[in-house]
Image (tube, rainbow, N blue to C red; front, side, top):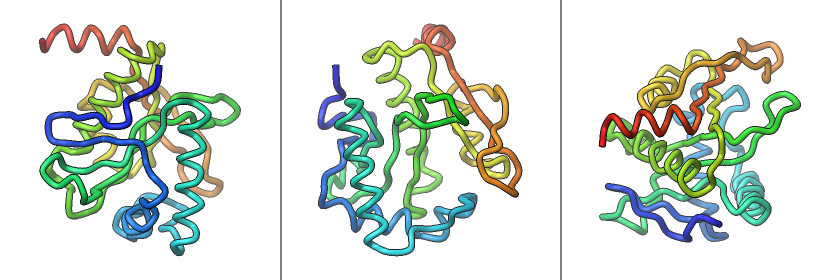
Length: 185
């Protein structure tokens, strides 16, 4: 089963990226503020954004899921971020990874947490995966807080950037997610 082309959460429209999303992707991934904790830094140019977009689209074709393009339901033509699920190498282990990046103008509104909730619901309810992982830089306290607020727990570290402190690995199992959601519903 694949994720619908368009999915609505409380405030957000989540959809599969399209080829014409490259300039929005560059606007967000090329912004130094969105790369404060990214050792690779911002995307250099629109060509790099098109390559990244090609990779996202290829991931969707291969796995039937991938990062979504994120807009507000009230402004569907304005992309405010990208995020969701994708398979990522954690050393030599492939894991279902949750990630997100939002335009600075959208920070502080709970959108990353809402996206996280939608991604976990999709992973556990539709894909029936056993666990979802997240990977953050240790100093990225905002992202770590979002993962923790949504029930993910620190489970280790990964030496994935030579010469930098190890990234922090988070995880949530389907069982833990189900128990958490039973308590709030």
